Image (cartoon, rainbow, N blue to C red):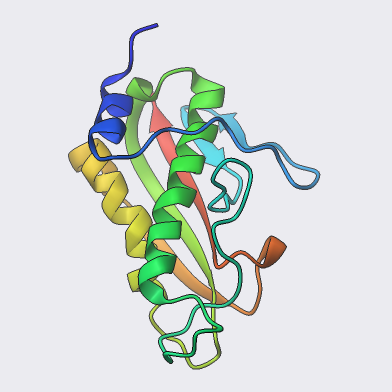
Length: 160
């Protein structure tokens, strides 16, 4: 099977589109409605494991995840979201537009840099899809995420 242009772009950026992550509860990774794909929240799994756990803080305390690391994990989470998209539409070249990104950051109460963390997902989408990757977005701080993940990302894409 020929590699799609977007998967080629992902590889050229130094990433690999993973297999779709298995759900950790009672849901499916993505649902199609009309010409839109809605993904479930995706954690930054790498080969079935979280690369880090805990809350994000810029306090310098080594017991926290740094914002810089969390930004990388947001990029990984969005790759997992793209894998979920591909699982229901078959080919990322069918993506017409990334419409919305919602990012959750497990945050130390003093941390207010959630937008910078979720930029990891947004910037990667822009690099992969160009203008079609620009989107509306929410970046939300929360006290805890599933499996103590530092980030979770969900996306909505329009496809043809």
